[in-house]
Amino acid sequence: MDFALFMERYGYKILFAIFGGIVLLIFGVVLLSVYSFLKLYGLLLGGLFLISIAVYAFFAKRRYLNAYGEALGKYFYDPKYGKKP
Image (tube, rainbow, N blue to C red):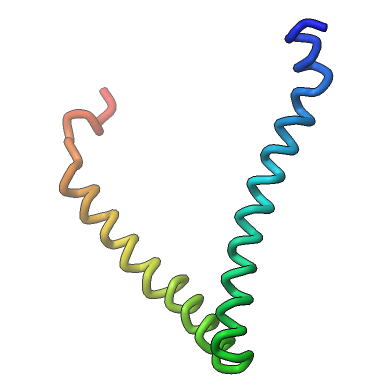
């Protein structure tokens, strides 16, 4: 069996398995960290901490990073490359 036939027959399955393993690894690390955080601080206090961290990340940190990106975009923007002829 040559390489082209092998990739046609098994290539997508192998790539799907690799991608699935990476996704499972990412979710596993996140779930393990949440579990250890809840085990360390308890369900009520740990849950409140995690909810407050999520609210901070999705509202305050997002606005900060958006403003930072706009400021850097204005600083590094070169008008001669941005205009269309």
